[in-house]
Length: 264
Image (cartoon, rainbow, N blue to C red; front, top):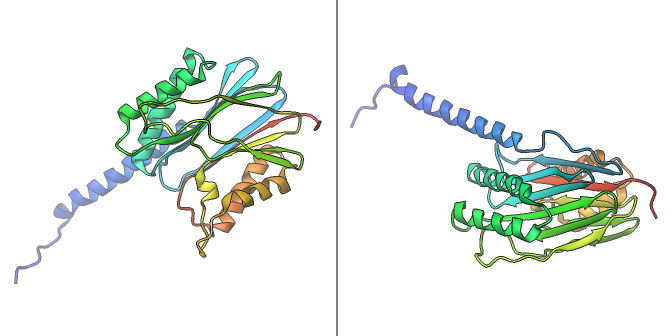
């Protein structure tokens, strides 16, 4: 029988060092990932907005972003790169950086911006990886929200007791060379709330195998819509966490936008 070699400190050190290096690399990815979320928020009168992202791993594929496209307009993005972990985080960083760069060329050209983003994703993404995306611009003077929904879970729009879902207007990014989109529009009245989310919210699963689903999300939103926006998002996060029994299997992202003032 071959003797089992002694594991001396000298022999073990390369393995320990490799493990420590891997842990440090993941921590570096996490720190860079965190910096990709908005660090400062544009100030616009007459509108409240907020976002939250809880990653299932050290680095994930979800992201959101806010930016001022003019003194009276707010751009917002919510995206979800397929899969999770380091590969998704790297692709997410590529997509988010592309969108931040492309928006400088003129946010009004939604179709051109997203067509270029699709091309960049096709060139940089591994096969079968893609991203869903909700890309919008809100004008605080008129309350108009122009948007493209690229295969993303349909945001919910609340006005009093009524609700509607903003359906996809394009396919996901990164899968198809021949990519086209339609631009849709909705007008927010004072008191209206728009909630954007990723599928980590609605597909959160409990021990019985049931999904949280859009109906539970809508019920939570309607019941708690009187809360300030940041507290409303936290309430949604808490509801999903309790339902999934504290065991999320995917990134969870929520973004809210509310036109301030009295309901009409």
